[in-house]
Image (cartoon, rainbow, N blue to C red; front, top):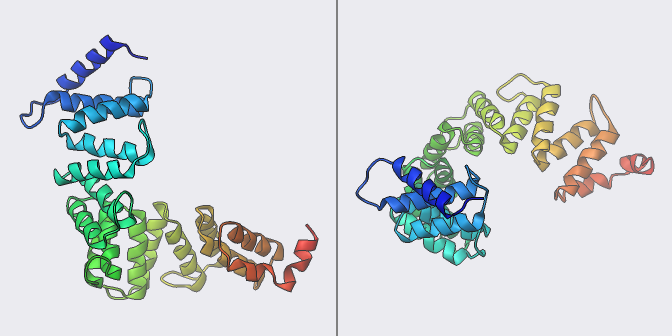
Length: 296
């Protein structure tokens, strides 16, 4: 724990660590960083209530980064009661000052109706502002908006351009989506070899859908030599990340063909069902699995 003198010393140290700036009081920057220290348990005992209070003090002085942080406290109920309307108020204050993260957060509120009425046009507007500053998540959403015409006129070429920007920053979902664009020829010339490479990069960065698609490429020989064992390995990686399509594919592969194993097939169908994939119920009810069920 820290007493009042320790806090004052912390504030003085934080102020001294910053370069001079005329646009905001030094105390606002200090309050924000002190809040961050309590938020992240950096040199002090974690205390979300104190973090929120220091974020508020800085936010009320107009410090954009702290306005965004304070807004997020209201989203998750960290040090304050959850209040999505308050979250939107603070996100908007920071976003109007050009804070990239706040612009993204405000866009998501408009997109999902958190604390404000759903507005696809406003969501796109704020996603675009954040995307133009380099936020890869916002670039992904701008790409999606152009893909389906949500809040903006549909444009597959603009969709590909923005997804490419997010992918270039290593965004796993964007890498997977760019792979799909190449696979289907959406906004770019069809190229299954390029699709496989993007799928693989996305999978290596943690995308479940990309891992599933790598498995499909190996299974069907799209952009890479057909390899059943590698297909199973990648499906299993995707399944471990919760991809139910991969679970169904594993069930189908073990249900028939080389390496047939009804026990494993049933196991994967059951796992898909338990994960919310209701289509697997048709597979689970097949007569061929009766012996597996009876044997349990």
